[in-house]
Length: 113
Length: 114
Image (cartoon, rainbow over all chains, first blue to last red; front, side, top):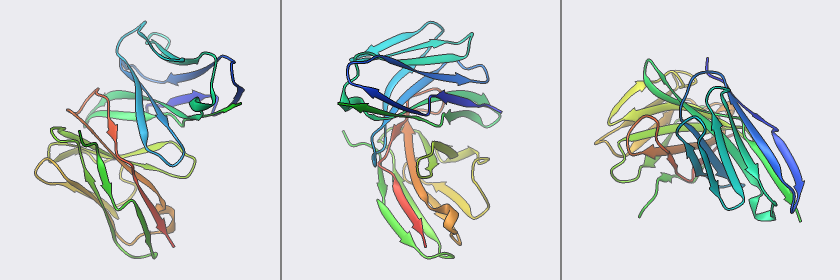
């Protein structure tokens, strides 16, 4: 059974600090997604990582993928309050019924001013 | 352009009643997905459609849940004889095709079963 685990599940950090969120998954996949969800809102796509060693950056967020280690990281640089949200990673795998996307439990990030 | 829309945005119902949740995907998207998100939790995959077909129904929690899609567009998720544990946000997403593509999410339907 495919499992996607994120840690930490909750992160409180000061503005200006750096931190990394980790996403581990249990089976082979060469595509990993990061989404952001603001309170009471739906999910917004941040990154799609397509291959081993892929790195993508948008503003203060940088995501990377290591398919051999089955690990993705979302690095936050010099955090600002506007980054407060829940961040989900998700992995697509091929099963008998087609591709299935499994989400991690989410990391709830709170950036204190 | 228009994103994924869902209706109703909020639904309060009594235990034992049936509810229908609607999803309008982005025009041209052939794949459509339903997820459930309980308060403070992650996303639970329910079902997806490629066109009008649902190859994988294994995520539906019980036989009280069913979904259909007509014309390769609008989808309806029906919950019969609702129970309090069905209370959650039901999210719909669509993508250009099924597989390893970014999914675009709707705003969700917040269902409360009293």
